[in-house]
Amino acid sequence: MTVPAGAGTPVAAPAPSQIELERRLYRRQRGRRSIVVSVASTVVVIAVVYFGVVNTPGWAAVQQSFFDPQTAIDSFPSILEGLWLNVRILFFSAIGVAVFGTLLAVVRGLRNPVFFPLRMLATGYTDLFRGLPLIIVLYLVGYGIPGLGVFPRLPAEVWGTIAIVLTYSSYIAEVLRAGMEAVHPSQRLAARSLGLSHAKTLRLVVLPQAIRKVTPALMNDFVSMQKDVGLVSILGAVDAVRSAQIAQAETYNFTPYFVAGLLFVVISLPLIRVTDAIARRQQRREQIGGTV
Amino acid sequence: MNDTGSGLEARITPDASAAVLELRGLRKAFGEHEVLRGIDLTVHRHEVICVIGASGSGKSTLLKTVNLLEGIDDGEILLQGTDIADPRIDVDATRARIGVVFQQFNLFPHMSVLDNVTLASRQVHGVGRASAEENARRLLERIGLADFAGAYPDRLSGGQQQRVAIVRAIASDPELLLLDEVTSALDPQLVGEVLDLVTELKRQGSTILMTTHEMHFARNVADRIVFLHQGEVVEQGAPADVLDAPEHPALVEFLSRVHA
Image (cartoon, rainbow over all chains, first blue to last red; front, side, top):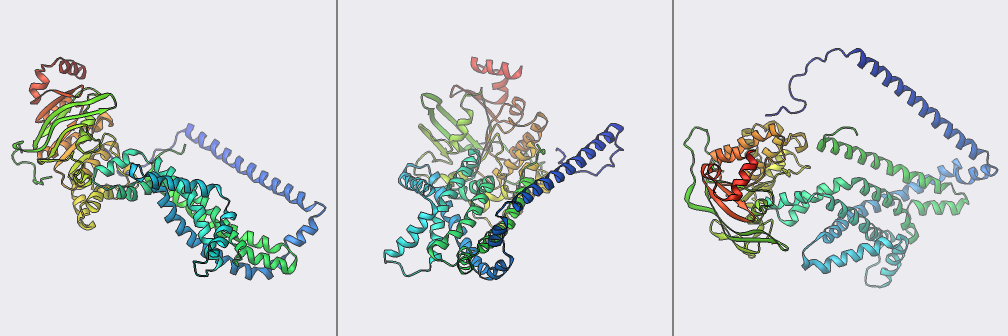
């Protein structure tokens, strides 16, 4: 039997040789020098940009109308309240997109000729909704469907959520499909040979591996969706963007938009970091390899 | 497998009265190219059959057709007397009765060793997680990999992965075990540990149909060697007869090359 990596009793390492000590010294010096260079260049770039902007002729006016502290403080509570609506829309959109997008991806991956019409339908759907601007989908769904008069009156944010799910599902479906195709066919073979059905093979073997392969792309779309949630404001839903707009209309000052923008960035940051961490952990667990 | 406990009991010999698998006139073509041209072969209970032959002789395709991973163009595949080539048969249920191990292991990289081994028991055979895991741990214990139950396949050497793949295939007591070149992807020093496990399975009475290039192993372990040439069984028999007194010119030539 082979000895697994990391097994066995640790042995005290012998003292490093002269050559190794010299190499380590060199690496340390190099490391120190690159840190100094990067810090210095960052400071210089920030300084140049800052002084460049501050010394423009119109800076005083721009600062007044976009970065006014008092307006920011005044508008903050209502924008934050609006943001809570964005977060809720995002939550339900994410669930809807995960379900519908996966369904589309699975249907597009069906190979049996019996499913040809379904597959064509899914293909047509993804083609259509990836090409259609979200803002147009929002108008069509938000004003068109209620206009049919068959649905009960629903708040604008519900129609907005539906429009976002319709559009983003088509993106996610394509990403997932690429991931599923990237899972080696021998994995399906192994699963089927164990007696797993097509559906269980997909659910237990193919999809989990596919999602790992495309996590960065999925996150990218998620962050993109997170900010597009702000577009539901055009249907009249009072979200962060709409609140900012209302505040702006009252004060003729654009600072509320800046506040709303900042808040969108802030809520996206934790998720991005968490995903990076999860991806790193998975990689460490499932792949042993060098750093290259 | 028949769990017969300690290793000192009498050798289990093939039961010539019970055919686990019977192939009749099996034919398979890929386009114009006929890969299997009328294969007749019977595998008896507790029998280990090694299929040998040059690359492209149809060995791997033969095993794939038996597990219904590849359709056939003509003939019958009788598993315990039932024709499983019949399109009305439940394919998944049939596959669940046959264990398969591939050249490239094909463990699931996103599952721990334990989950790999218990997957079919839990998802296909309806065994509860607790008892599936108990069984899996017992099997892993026996191949010396109990400490790796929670590890992911990538942490294991090729030989260890292949042994886990074999355990995964036998975890739900298949009636027949198909081994397709299970040592071909391994470093030479890892081949032995996998073949030792196969020998152990034979000792416990498994019914095995395997393809291999390990002539030494085939000689020592196989009950019968089948030589496949251009999609046909041209010679078969006891290892000594086939390997030491080959008759068909293609076999003579094949053996002269692998022995060189």
